[in-house]
Image (cartoon, rainbow, N blue to C red; front, side, top):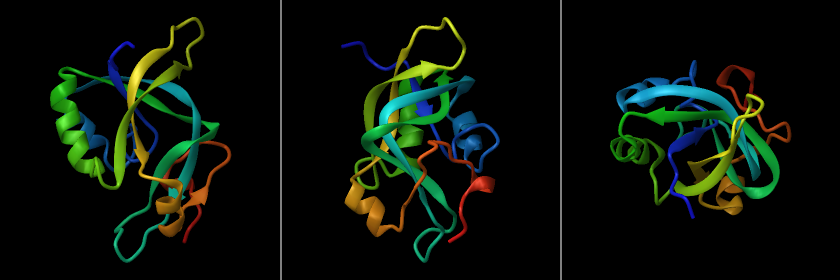
Length: 142
């Protein structure tokens, strides 16, 4: 199986969102709109342990829209992103395939940060987003 060459982001790391600066610090080169299939997207509201809302995905029926980000040095980028995502605890980094939105472009192997489990998402108050799109300004309050 081919190793991932980039990272699929669907939430606060996207261009224009709260944590995009972390992607820049990680050596971001460029982004392209894309989707992943076989995942369900949830909105996790702000709470006592969360200073702001953010999304999470789990495996399941559905499609999630976001962007593929390429970095100057993927290993260096992953070290920084793993810390932000609390990899191994809140999120797990998994390989998957992203389908670029531009017609005629081949799918690419990417890393995606998925939530540890559906049960963990539900206990965090996760709200399913069947349209598969998350943006900080467009999500339910609560």
